Amino acid sequence: MNEAIGSSLIVIGVIFDFLGCLGLVRFPDVYTRLQASAKCVTLGTCGILFGLFLVKGFTATGVKALLCLVFILLTSPVSAHALAKGAYRSGVKPWEGTVVDQYGEDAAGKV
Amino acid sequence: MIYKGLLFLLWFCVWLLLQWPPSVQYMVTGAFVSLLVSFFTADIFSSLYTKEEAPPAKGGGILSFFSRIFWFLCYVAVFLWECLMANIDVAWRVLHPGLPIRPGTLRLRTKLKSDIGLTFLANSITLTPGTTTIDIDKANGYIYVHVLALKEGCEKPEARQCLADRFERILERIFE
Image 1 (tube, rainbow over the protein chains, first blue to last red):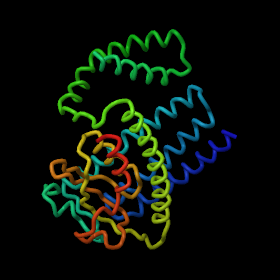
Image 2: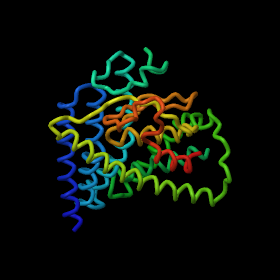
Image 3: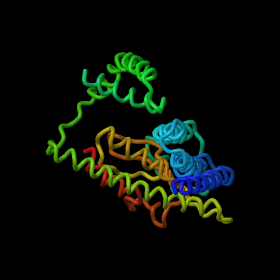
Image 4: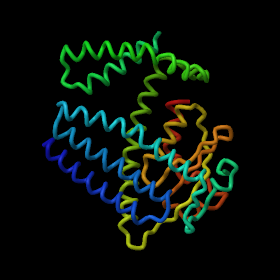
């Protein structure tokens, strides 16, 4: 039973990771592409790791998968945030289809 | 001193998980290593914590502790649900041939004051697909968020709190 749930979680994770990569190609600018890669992390990679844990149980492999899950959840938003802020500060303009840019209007967004 | 003990426990647990299944040989090595590391790093962590004196918790006591735990569990449940919905939403936008996105950066007012509360809010916003925290203006209580698909009307200056409302209300009960 655990194995079935785990395997389907891994399949779902792979599908969402693929969609994230597709978004990385299709989206127009840095910031929207970051969004696509953020989607990879939550349901994609975490789904794969949690599925691996369900399949393997409390073995050497399964526990390491859980540990990786925690570290990815801690580090990935920090890096995404740092990339977005760094790109904005170094003058990368948002896509021309952007509806509103309140960060650029405020002093905080000025270089 | 208490930081050293807590850090030692934390590092030791991580070591144990890395060396699963536990065996005496590795546990002795792990205890030695984590003792050394916690001895050297405790000062950094404790100075980080005491530099900005945390305001005394309102109400205090054991009841407040358990209510925080309860709200934290609620927060995890809400976060997982929001994450799932947002994942499906972004996946649909990626697959749609017309690429229906309306990106933009929003200025959101936040009531949270504590560092850890703001960190949790910013990280949950970033982990939820479709939204990324760009910057925090702590002095004025603003967070700047890049949104992949803005709802209609959210771009007007008078529009308020188009997202992150739900996270914030729960986080307020945990950390403030």
